[in-house]
Length: 249
Ligand SMILES: Nc1nc2c(ncn2[C@@H]2O[C@H](COP(=O)(O)OP(=O)(O)OP(=O)(O)O)[C@@H](O)[C@H]2O)c(=O)[nH]1
Ligand SMILES: [Mg+2]
Image 1 (cartoon, protein in one colour):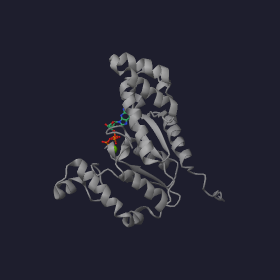
Image 2 (cartoon, protein in one colour; image 1 turned 180 degrees about the vertical axis):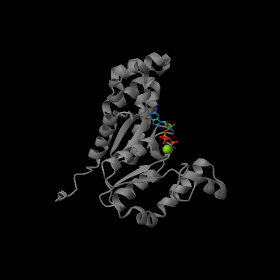
Image 3 (tube, protein in one colour; image 1 turned 30 degrees about the vertical axis):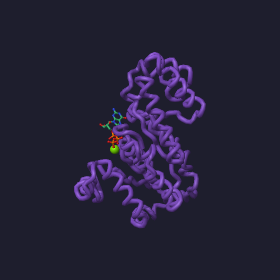
Image 4 (cartoon, protein in one colour; image 1 turned 120 degrees about the horizontal axis):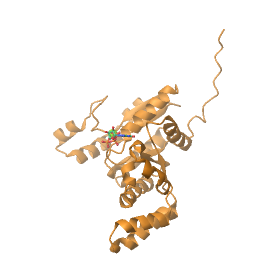
């Protein structure tokens, strides 16, 4: 999940490759009707054309249609058992922050299909270039957490694009500290925003709910680290039966 262009599809492709290399059973499902490569047919262009909707109306129509087609979905993903399913989601932020559809979809995955799920919320590293943008990103990640009510990890993507200088001062963004955030935000905003900055940094600090895991897709260790967080959240691998070692004569 995450805003448009935040690196969701790249994360999905990276995780898919990682699991394929590790010889795990993994599947990738694309929930973004605007995606270019498409394995099945209900594309948003068709919906927009036939129903006369714009891109957002078309997306909502597709989600509503999906929620009415849970039998079909079960045929597609019902046999996965202990497999790992990666779901690439669209970049319309309102799906995570206040529309009920993604929440209903998560509920069905958990309760009807009995998946252990974790939301991977992607925010790109340009959000740490200034504190006010960072606030906006944290607020969106937080509202997704409240709205969806599923375990969530927050990933700071595109770390390969961050300058070495900035990298040194990044800790404050990964595990936010109120006074540092506040003084940075106050430098960047007119005085009338001081109390708003104070309130937002208090929320970030007091709830201690938002921390970010950096992801640099050019670094194998970084990929493994992010995926291990996602795995821990769903206890992936813990239910597996020990496998008989192969006997080679
Ligand atoms: N340098 C760099 N570029 C990245 C990284 N992740 C994504 N990008 C680029 O950022 C752009 C958007 O990446 P996507 O993975 O398509 O982002 P998305 O969140 O799926 O985008 P939407 O589905 O359109 O919302 C693409 O041009 C990617 O090549 C990264 O880790 N490093
Ligand atoms: Mg995408």
